[in-house]
View 1 (tube, one colour):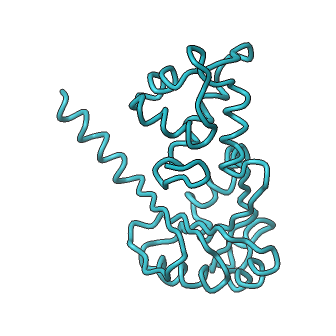
View 2 (tube, helix red, strand yellow; view 1 turned 120 degrees about the vertical axis):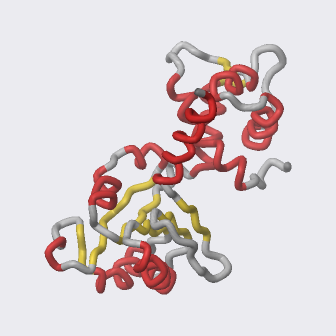
Length: 203
């Protein structure tokens, strides 16, 4: 894998690396790929390849300078460039995501939510009819879907038509999207079921 072109799998692991690097004591100057692999329960060869693609090879016997490696990962993730996202569906899940401040650590801000229910309109929840004009005015490219399953496809179509190029979907459906639009599915119920299955099989 050439430096400059990262696979989707590698990009998916970078936030974990960055979180770990940030958690280390301030006086930690160097960190090795082996230490990161052990801490995150990942294969050392895979971690070494990922870090090499992001920051080149580390120094023999000591590894990478923590600050340099963290800065390289932050650059790849666009932490300091800033990015706005919008959310559609101001229910309990949507409002929880809207109020979560942790996205800022990765350079992302959920600017506001949109909902079709007039009773939910507030300072940070705008009418759904305003979505297209808002996205175009602010050049928003990331949309988050937290609507019921039967409204997810229509919502996705509206987001794409508003210029959205990446979608984070919490509805348990598979969306039909045009080429060039990236989607990430999040099924919390399925994740919890996997955990239940894991402890059931090991008990």
